[in-house]
Length: 153
Image (cartoon, rainbow, N blue to C red; front, side, top):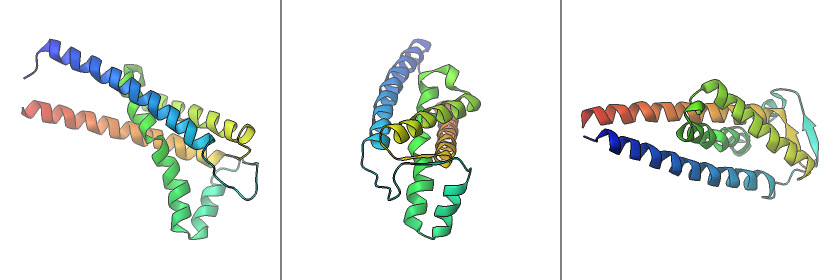
């Protein structure tokens, strides 16, 4: 059984490790979404109709397109929702995680449009925020499992 001092030290180590992982993740996220070539045949465009591109991809029948664009956008933001509460107790709010996901995704979409000359898609913002929330739920589940495992030791 750990002493209270060991718990404090473990908590500090977890926050530092989480902060490092969050920085690496954010760097990789911005690099992947802005600088990795993602060819779009129609060039710079805007989709402000909610569910329009999701519906288009779903109706395409292409499993790869569905996975890449729908599931991929969710998976891409899951680490954000998982790591923010590791770094800060203030991040242990599902509403705050959803807002952080929305804001981060909106910044990326704006940068993609204005800098990378690609698409600003409202559906990407929705899917990314959903991904952050799923990541947060994974964090909460992991925390509960950790507490259960710790009690049994």
